[in-house]
Image (tube, rainbow, N blue to C red; front, side, top):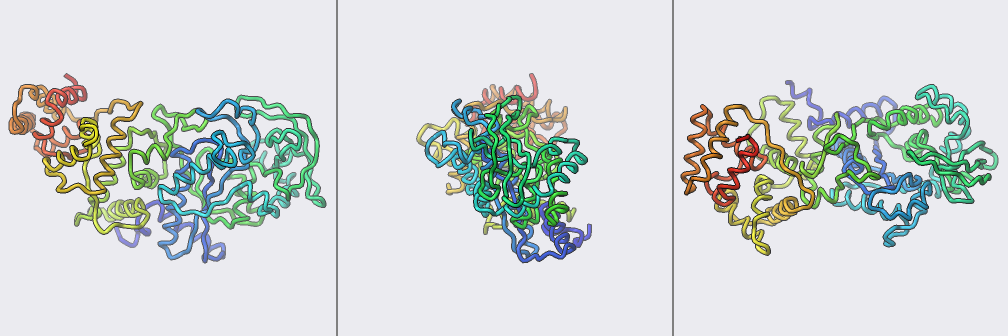
Length: 531
């Protein structure tokens, strides 16, 4: 393929960045600063999906900078949203604060000024650990300081037109009878329970009635209060159907990715930005949500999520970045069982990057090299790190003597000829792998798919193991089993490593089997391929 057809580093990030920049040029807007935005949820524990939006947008920022454009990521916290449901693990007394703005709910642990500050600190802390650089913007502060006032006035003045358009676009008639704005009730302090009835542009006030609302499956009754709020004083907020547009216009956002579930909201917001606010909406990239292993959406309220802190307890920031940058299309089922996959895949990318090997497909070669560079946030190290299959580190560290884990694993790896001397990088990897191997709630490893010949050869080798006495006997048995099934060593050994380590490479088999235990290895192999 012609090298000229490769955009930037050949990844989807480069394609999105180029399309964003080209669109800005067509619109005649300045490219002196190209802002990208990510929304930060502030209502529950952060999970991989909630940090994914920011990590992806940060990647687009890096790609824009690679094109020569100054860029920054605006991380907008939705901390003026109301609490819709108490997440799993949070105290039950929070039910008394349903529909209250999360920035006005006490912190359940008492270590921050509010519920929103506590949850927001967890999410921002995760982004900091991952290395994402951003400009933080609190939604509550944006409303209180008047940064959205101009947009609010225009939207409320055109509420009738907007209500009809919403019905036309998505078949929702709700906003034909109320304004797309929800005041904080002066009596009960809740936000979603109010219905905004009219807007007085002379006084900048909205008249409302506290009627109640349905949050999920739960009905939250209003208190019946009727009154007015001044939209310039930060005691109300725009509804999602129009709030994105206001943010884009107020903060001059040129790119924002969004999850598939927000497709209708983005469609409406694009129209509001263009037609009501006179601001061309940002360029978009749509992604699908992460799911748990059962295929269910990860949810803050149900607790079936993987948090970034959990992932980083067992793996590197680079592996989590790789998870986000590998592709943007299609849903993915993610759990902590996938940590070894992404750790080893990152190592493979780095190994290839620093080698002299090149894929004959120039597009693929560029994409893989680009994927590695974005996984290190374009800060390529001087040399590659130590690459040892993650499951091997997990197995060795799990059986290592307490208090001498690093020494035990390092010595075994030296015996296998895989490392020469311990390094800080290896120490971190051993610590991650031991934590992963000994964590609570771990599940059995799914065996890989093997061809019939490989499956038969592995079964024969496993059956012979308990009766073998030396490392050399084990090596010979492996070669013999492969030969009987017409397999080359390069076809057989990766099959064994795939079962035992989840990788196509590993240490010399004889010493490893003696360390791990012949009976234990035999059982593991037979469990994977059948007796």
